[in-house]
Amino acid sequence: MVQSSVTLSENLAKLDGVVPDHARGVATVVGCLGRVAAVIAKELAHAALRDRLGYLGGTNVSGDQVKKLDVWGHDTVEAAMRATGACAALISEEAKEPIEMAVDGANPLVVCCDPVDGSSNLDVNGTVGTIFSLRPTGGKTPAGPASLGPGTEQVAAGYVMYGPATTLVYTAGRGTHGFTLEQETGEFLLTHPDIKIPSRGKTYGINEGNLHSWHPGQRAYVEFLRTSDKASGRPYSLRYSGAMVADVHRTLLDGGIFMYPSDWTDPAKPKPKLRLLYEVAPMAMLCEQAGGRASTGTERVMEVKATEYHQRTAILIGSPDDVAMAEEFYRRQS
Ligand code: FBP
Image 1: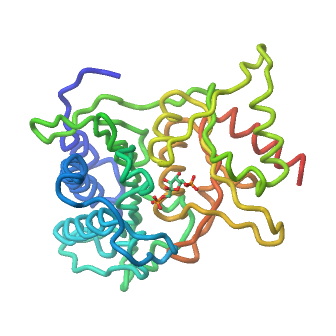
Image 2 (image 1 turned 45 degrees about the vertical axis):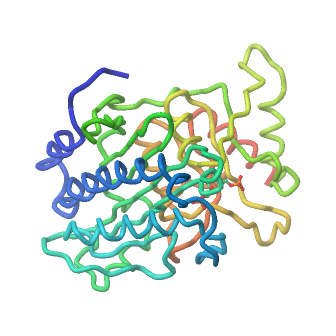
Image 3 (image 1 turned 30 degrees about the vertical axis):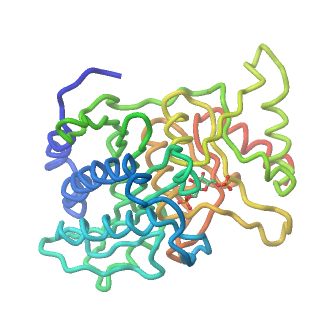
């Protein structure tokens, strides 16, 4: 971590000339998401004072009960993306279909976004986040379908974590970099340049309440992590926040592994939870750019081809040695 005065805008400006033409809009869109993040951070800090907590009623396309801040967060991101003129379509957790938008430049982008990640933490003042992924449209209209492809087609990805500090972490394919919001100026300053995840960690994150529904390899791997063995630094400690952004952020900085495996109650129809386009694929790009690994248990997440906007997939993400070990347990038990 460094005390820095390099702002997010200055860092993004350096992308010009290094990113390919079809990614020219990255600086504009990520810069705009940084400004949106400062607005969301302020709103979260006052939500209880402004009757913004609680449910709005109704469910979203994933069947989740919708919170007031989920919709407010979505509306705020949508309005900001429209204003950039560089976003041709928005794929959001809170909208069933892609939201097509007018653009005023060449090489617009498709933005996939989870405006408020970790919604179950909102009413208990827990950490939440915003996750985003940027893909080229390739001149397609409508642009929404341009988001359907493997994670390797992403040109940028990032998240914002609204914790004690507000942190924005992004990659444009040249390393993963972290910024901290300076509340007074509303500027993000570079505090975590070129994050490198440790090859192995000491913690694991998973909802152990789902243990009964896990693949046998998943169960065996968690049992392995919980078994005492000084030589291999086990047992690992369990750390689980209920918000993927917070669990992945900790894992990127300290190493270890975060997992949200599929429900294997019916092995013929495994049921994953987290969404590929705006939760799992962006985190996979960030983690790989930091030297980590992201797997479904049996394949590299970045090669999973999206065929639906709200498609779900399993995720095991973190230190390369830890994720490789988890995959080994899946192989042994498959
Ligand atoms: P949303 O809040 O955006 O729906 O995200 C899903 C999520 O909250 C992740 O952030 C988190 O890792 C996971 O679901 C928690 O799920 P569970 O409550 O089943 O442990």
